[in-house]
Amino acid sequence: MTRLESMLEGTPYVAYLYGYPHKTAYRPLTPALPLEDVWAKERRDALFLYLHVPFCEMRCGFCNLFTAAGPKEDVVDAWLGALKREARRVKDALGPSTFARAAIGGGTPTLLDVAGLETVFDLAAELGVDPRDVPMSVEVSPETVDAAKVAVLKARGVDRVSMGVQSFLESEVAAVKRPQKTAQVEATLDLLRSAGFPTLNLDLIYGIEGQTVETFLHSLEAALRYAPEELYLYPLYVRPLTFLGKKSRAWDDLRLSLYRTGRDFLLSRGYSQVSMRMFRAAHAPAARGAVYRCQEDGMVGLGVGARSYTGSVHYSSEYAVASREVRGIIQAYIERDTASFGEVRYGFVLDAAEQRHRHLVLSLLAEGVDPTVYRQRFGTEAKADFPMLAELEAHGLARDVDGVFQLTAAGVERSDLIGPWLDSEAVRARMQEYAWR
Image 1: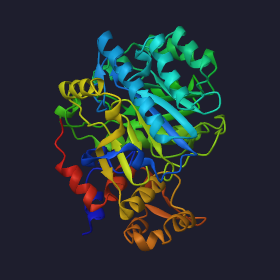
Image 2 (image 1 turned 30 degrees about the horizontal axis):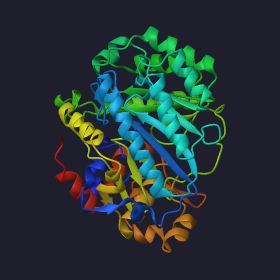
Image 3 (image 1 turned 90 degrees about the vertical axis):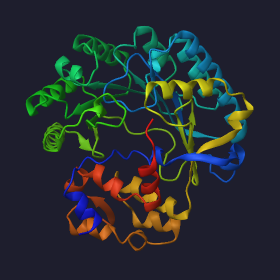
Image 4 (image 1 turned 60 degrees about the vertical axis):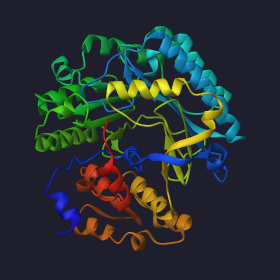
């Protein structure tokens, strides 16, 4: 039995692979790498700027993001001071650069007050990002966004807002330890829609304890009342050190059934499926600005918890989930001086083989692997470099469509199995050795 066949007999929900390699494959870099050297050979004409706000009003039971709940005002102020030092040091290291996309995420960026939000936008502007020219997305939450903060987002030219609703039923959000009121969610959605942002994204979760096909359809119908341009449907995971990760339940069949229900429902309502999680409405605006290619173009991450990508080095602050560990990492970030932000201390160095792996994984889990693009970039053939791809075809999980190697419907719904299956042996070993904290 091959490794793929063995995995196919188990859960289809192995891990959400939103980047390659996963952050649990990162390690301390000794000696630290000079920031200028890391970016020296990189194209800087179509970068992605990501600013991470590592604070939330509360921490949901399913969350394994790098965030601290309920920060004191002095901690937020000190974090903003460190963010300024980091941004200015990074700007010096990058030199002349052009950004094609930008996002402010977290955590919950709108936990910041109006002045704090303005500061974050000012730092983006110092790096050359004007949302009126560069597409920018900002994450918001029903508990933290209000008319004054929405006015800041509008004035700054934000064209996409994203909100995690998870469910429109209070009993279901309570099951994932999220004290959320549906009336507040609906009022926030009315506010966001009235503001006229071109793109509204909503996140829903399936696989919640007590959730059924009928209740999931209720949330989907409720979401569509606001005509979101994008919808993300996330399977619930229980992860180490999250509240829910301390419980063990087997509910693969339910999640798969709910996924198919949600997919079929959205397709019937005119949405197109972009990936396992992402669905885009027919009325969604066309992408504007310069083209950003995640497989090739770099990402500049600012703020503790943010990741940065060059072709050969991925780096970030250290990662943790447990509250005490997260707060300790944030405090260490706050105490850093300007010079220290010129050192890359923690990350993963991608050799030529890992660069091929990354291109393959990110392509296959989205639009598919274009052999011409792969050949132009690496000078080799994808199927020759990765003969394991033939297994996907043999099991009906992928096929060639107009010359592009794409996942089938059966493959898409197993993206969280196929992604980890494609991990290199080195990455897999590092992830298995990682000690959650």
